[in-house]
Length: 308
Image 1 (cartoon, rainbow, N blue to C red):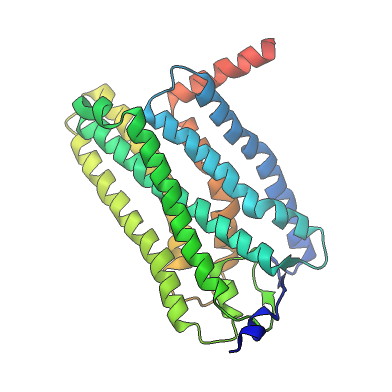
Image 2 (image 1 turned 90 degrees about the vertical axis):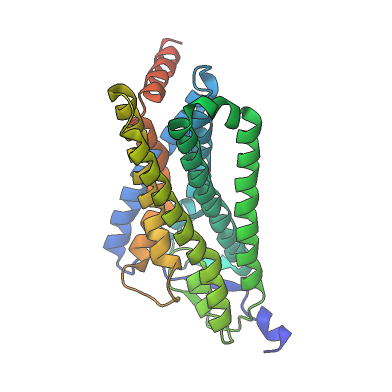
């Protein structure tokens, strides 16, 4: 394919979540209400952790970063999806599509690596408590944070680079409500078998390996928890259970989408909706609802604001 043909497509038409106007209106209302209720909750979590001197442990440091990542992740897809529900023609430029795809994988991979870091933090805290303050000192925490951001950037830049090398000369209809690798690759005017394998390796294999590694680490932690005192055991079990719930919410849809050849399934759009809009906003809230220290600090913060 000649290079000039690769620039014929300058925009993509998003077919959206559904073609039914009634279904679109219902989803629009539900997502908007959910978005307006849960998103401020994520910012409240960040503010609570930042303002309370008692929440300086690495667990809360990483929880604050999880809330920030998830809030940022929700801005990539949800606002445009809500706006598209109100428009007849859903168009996104080629550059806008690549940008959306880049940040989707940048923040998504960053969150995957953050969950790995949080599992490591819990492993050290529960299995090696005497060494916890030494191993998880502030310098190490910031180094791990930098590493996960760099890891997310590296993963995403590879995804974007592989897409940018593909020629697009029509058609330009994306069967989704946002730009993502599986749908964009289908529109390329060339054989994409090798690129699909590279994409599955970069996204699917990475996601699956991290998922299996996390399950194995939490299995080890839960086995070690059995020998703890009743109070310490209950607290460790509560924390690990919360982490495992988030791991399944984050990795389940990602594995479904990225670990198979890029063929369409009827459930793809619904899974993508939960993966890109619903679950990211829920993750920090689930952590908070099961953490007594953060809940108590949040109540104090809200009571002070109300008095003021």
